[in-house]
Image 1: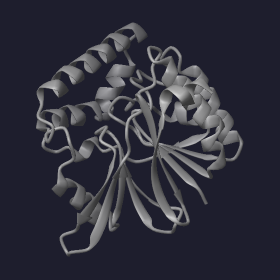
Image 2: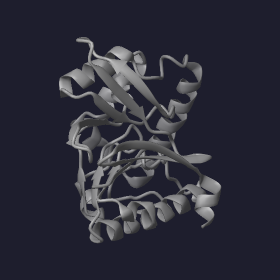
Image 3: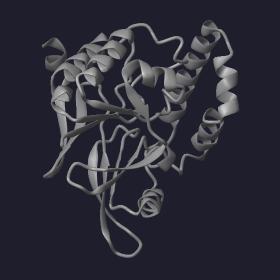
Image 4: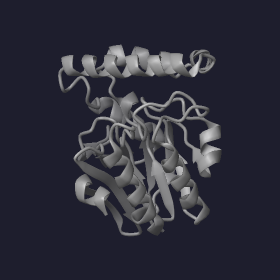
Length: 248
């Protein structure tokens, strides 16, 4: 069994190098996996399954080719692509995951998967917005608007997010340690894998009863690409240069 996990690619037409790199990744490394987990913010924005962003159709097509080849696909929502729905999942031959999903890792251990934004509890302003954006009624109201209106809203949300993020202290936009411990204990596991913060690392964590645990953080795809590979021997956090990878 071989599992691969990625997040925070932020695919967009303005970064064709990222799209090329991911297409190459899907045709090579991902083909050697049994399961591929997309843990949110795969797209810089998503305004509905009926209106894929320019440049993303080749990604959808490549994901379908991958799932048709026998690789099981799983998608977890991020804060940028929270409007991905069942129509997308059907188009790529994948399955949507819950915001918090515990799976069996390739080495047999229970593994908690999250995008990670829900763990940044010190950012109270963002958490209030997250509750609103994840509200099904609010989402229905968004999807009822024209494509042009949704594009304008997505642009505004991205600009606001970047501006607000630049104003906040680093600890506010990072994972709250107590929130991570609570998530691990609720899931009854000692392994947590997430993205969102763009701060790739492997953190040793001690649960409230003294049990040793780990929090594995995926990096975002920018100058480097990041993924976690998991097999019967455990996991490896891997990075690679986007430039060379996208040019292959």
